[in-house]
Image (cartoon, rainbow, N blue to C red; front, side):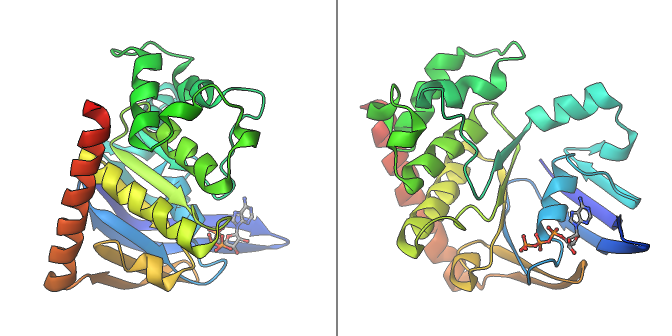
Length: 249
Ligand SMILES: Nc1ncnc2c1ncn2[C@@H]1O[C@H](COP(=O)(O)OP(=O)(O)OP(=O)(O)O)[C@@H](O)[C@H]1O
């Protein structure tokens, strides 16, 4: 889904003075793009993701996702929008009393789907390399494995956009890199737009495009050079083949 923000402002009340978490951001992210969002702590990265996911409302300006202006949607429209967005969080947020499989299915429980939920959950667990852990409780998995379950859960509703907020923040750097590679591979396979906020400059470079925030403003918007791009494409094609291999096993 295309994402477009125009003069987006989010203001919070901080003590007696208002605080601008987003201060007039305008940006267009075409469908299927991979984008990292970097910037110091408090620069507005999470707020930007929350606005796109309709978890936070704009104070001024507009945000349009998949052609829908979120500020014009009623609550039922917002609920529908959130179903089309997958979220991945720093601390996984898996439900500890549910099995891995039930965690993946959980977001779809309140509504009907055109697909078999448990079948799709099993396919996604296979795609993230955890087919054999479906019956385990999340507490028995490593941090990297838990984040892979969270990625499968984010994809269960066939999202057009996946928002990953510091998805590597609770992981060591090698595991974090694997998680980001998995997100990129899934994007090639399932064709969603991917936005990843990160403090890690190295990880940020693996996305095709990098947005930099400072004090709620967009201060950088870079696209990887053609050579890096070609390398990323080759890597993601190889990765997509690997996913296909897993699925056809
Ligand atoms: N619900 C809220 N109420 C008041 N202030 C908030 C709220 N959410 C965020 N803020 C403030 O908005 C600013 C931007 O916060 P945000 O979490 O978007 O930054 P961030 O770049 O994601 O930071 P970090 O890298 O530390 O996660 C910060 O000053 C934060 O304190």
